[in-house]
Structures are given as C-alpha cells and as structure tokens.
Image (cartoon, rainbow, N blue to C red; front, side, top):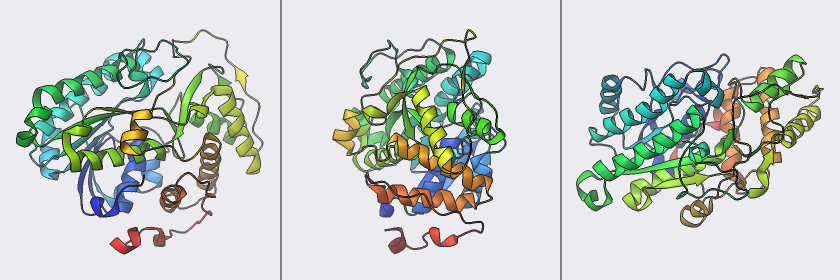
Length: 388
C-alpha cells in the first residue's frame, strides 16, 4: 500500500500544478522518497498557501509557468527529462468555473492536451498520471458509487471540463500511446479520479473546510450553501498514495494499467456537509477553540451535485489500494494542522511527520505530530536505509 522507496529514489519526476494544495503535498512526499522533482505551475493560487509555508520549493526544481503555454511546457519537459509525469495543474473550483468558464476550459482541457502533446515529444517518459476529478461523471444523483466505465459529463463548466480532460486522455492514449504499439512508444498513461480531497494547508475560496477554518479563526458565523449535499470526503494523502502506487505499476508493467481509476473513501465516509461541519466543530473545540454555529444560506445558488459517490473496487482489487484514515481521523488531523500553523510550527516538518504517520498507519489511527516551532530535519531521511 505504501510507495516503494527503492523505486522512487533518484527517479526523475515532473509535476504540473506543484504549487497547489494537492501538488504541494505530492511534492513533499516525493521529496521524502528521494525523487528528483521538477515542478511546473503558476504562482501559488492563494495567500497564505501550503507551497510557501512548507517550503516545498526548497526540495525540487520549481518552474513558474503556464500550462497553456505549449512551447514553454515542451521545453521544460525536455530539459527535465523525466521518467514519470503527474499532471495536477488545473482550475480546481466549481464556482470559479461559473465565474470564468473560458479560463476553466482553457486550463483543464487544453492544459491536458498540452501536457500530453509535450509527453509525445519527450522520449524519456514512461508513465503518466492525469489527475481529473470525481465530478467528471454524468451525475444522476444515484445512491451507489460511479464506476470507471460510467458515462462522463457535467452540468457546470468545471465538471464538464474534467469530463473533457478524461476524453482527451483516452483519445491520446488510443491515438499515440496504444497498448498494441507499446514496444515502440513505451509510455503508459492513466487517469485518476479522486473524491472531495481535504487536508491541512488548503486555503482555497468557496471550499468547505477552508471556509470553515477561516470562520472559526475569526469567530465569524459560517454560511453554508448545501448542508444536505453528500460528498466522498477523504484526506489528501489517501488519493496521493493511489497516484504513487499507480505510477509504479505503469512504470513497471506498462499499458496493462493504462486506464481510468477511482480513488475515494470508504462508503461510510460519503457523508452530508452538515455532518462534516459538526466533525470539524468538535475537533476545533477539543483543541481549545470555540467554533461559532453555522447558518444555512437560502439564497439561490448555481447548480452543484447533491449526491456523489465513487466505487473504488477496481483500485482495491487490482492495485491493493484502500483508504486508511476514516473521516473522523482526517478531520482531527486537519484541525490539529491548522492549530499548529497558527501557533507558528515548522509546517514543512509537520507535513513530513504527517506523511510518516500515514505510511505507518496501514489503517490504524496515529496521533498527530507534536508542534515544533523550530525545523526538525530528523524527519527527512537521508539514506535508503532510513527511508525504509
């Protein structure tokens, strides 16, 4: 279930979107594994942000550039000469998609086209993981989870753009990286569809956990748009473990794993928004805070899916992947992470300790790391033996 240290040590990896929330966590994990990483992304999308506070750029080559600039991306990929590529660069917010649909499609659809076209002209690449979203499915508000062979779609620009990115990925795979011609191109491409990812270090606007934490921190009343909506909540390290394991399989076994994969929580953790709010209020109260009550915003809102679940049986059976931290554990750790940030902890060391706890958990609950206000470089293994 854990990434293989010997596989990743000195492996050349290229990450788009490394300055974002998920990209920063993935970069930190790969740094811990000893990979040689090149990141390609715009400046961090928020202030504050995880990339800066965890000093993510200090352990990799970081290029600030636009995924929509194909010549620049091609040049960067050829120069990095990577073996494995993770594509996370995206416009990641549903409501931002309503405000700026053109940019959403340009980034999420043509950005994926540009990445795959650049891969096509970079002979070193052997494995590519294209990260999309659980919202790529044509959501019919079913009570059961969507499987990877369900129809794609989307009733809003963001969701539609992720469905389009899946279609682009499948088309490039069939046209240029077909399994029947594997011996010639030697590239395996998969897409990964994660649930609603939550974790410490997310400051995005119009996203539930960051909005709640901002309100708790300021003593303001959170205004909730859809308290009954059900989402597949999962800690950010859960899908990242899946992406890393998938990349290993693609690299070692080729096109047999070049397809779409769901990475979502256990079924009981697909819970309504109001229940997640109460989990977080409890965790904040246990840390000594006094979370204010929340209120339901009854104003008309743009359409967002009410009910969404993923079926992850394929990842469990074929990859051996499964979620480890239940929602209550994830919420507990998010509240502890944010308190550590507010109290001036070294957040790079804190994040690395969280990754260590996750890899040690194997489904068991592990207490959050203690708050350290000075950098603790002991959490960064320096030899292959330490990494084991």
